[in-house]
Picture 1: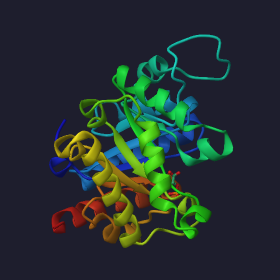
Picture 2: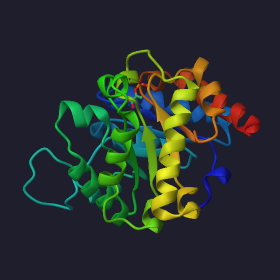
Picture 3: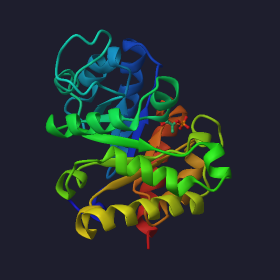
Length: 263
Ligand code: PEP
């Protein structure tokens, strides 16, 4: 894996449960058209399952990559309503979001399930975007770092450094997702730095330095620059602001601008 410092700024748009196939294709094509202005950034579009195919057709032959929002860990079987890693791969995805806080909090996903999904993604040659983050109550009671580290340890259980180096992580404070409240650059950096430190302690600095760590939680064009300038922030997982081509592309451009100023 390449060291994260030589990796382009990363902007992934999580479209959640928005946009049926036609609408999704239209948004994807606006983003593909504008992607030249954000050349040098890695752009990933993450539509709902039913819109993967229409978006795949639009991004084919462009630099824009495709991701899925979730998957099961088994390759096939009697799991009504689930989608397997092989199906996600077959749909043209390079990435898959694992353990998003909406899955954890609204659909009861556990750290154990997240761990199985991360392993399934890696064995299928999909890059997991492994999400973790604390609730407001955990932050206010001073348990942010403990919570993050316990999610990290459980999510990566049984993986070696080489596997971990292929993962993209996303720190997403639950209180900042979809709320308009963003972590300050210093708050985000504190957690990203802790995550990098914990990875380095467990897997060694070389592998830890390959892990791309995204920030997510109400990222907008006007806060992207100051967040990205922080040392351990390598890009963004964007929800609401990725539903409009111009704001998503502006976030990527702000990240590129800040990339040049990074210490
Ligand atoms: C997300 O869904 O991962 C997210 C960060 O959402 P928002 O940008 O809307 O807070």
